[in-house]
Amino acid sequence: MNAPRALIAVAALLFASAAWGQLRPFHDYDIGTEVEVVTTVRVQANMIDDYLEGIKQTWVASGELAKSLGQMKGYAVYISEMPNSGDFNIVLVESFASGADLEPSKERYDAFMKAWGQANEDKTREIVKNYPAMREITGQYRLREITFK
Image 1: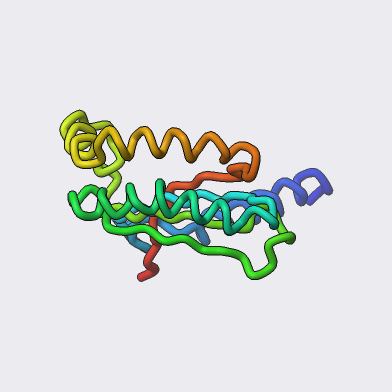
Image 2: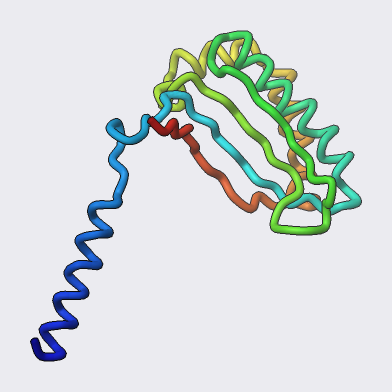
């Protein structure tokens, strides 16, 4: 066998073995129906407590309301113990029962806004005015859990 044919044969074997090794969804693993929306945030290290105070009154409060209305499963806030390293130092996680809970819905929006009220809406607008000076959103992700079989 000459060199070009040998090279083609080796390449074909490599590609074939790569195809044999690929996992298949629902056969080799399941994809969860729950969805996690993860936001990574870079807050200036000297502003972390101020940012946390703000999101407690806005993001956390709205998360509590959405949970009480059955619009989300839950939420979590994570903070890095090394706030000056990496691309982010705060992680915000929202948990939903399914992707359908993230689709636009006038009914869910109206229910939320009625319960949230004008006073909370006005307070939120005032608080978030300071966010651009203290933080930068560095990433947003929609994640689903993979369970191997």
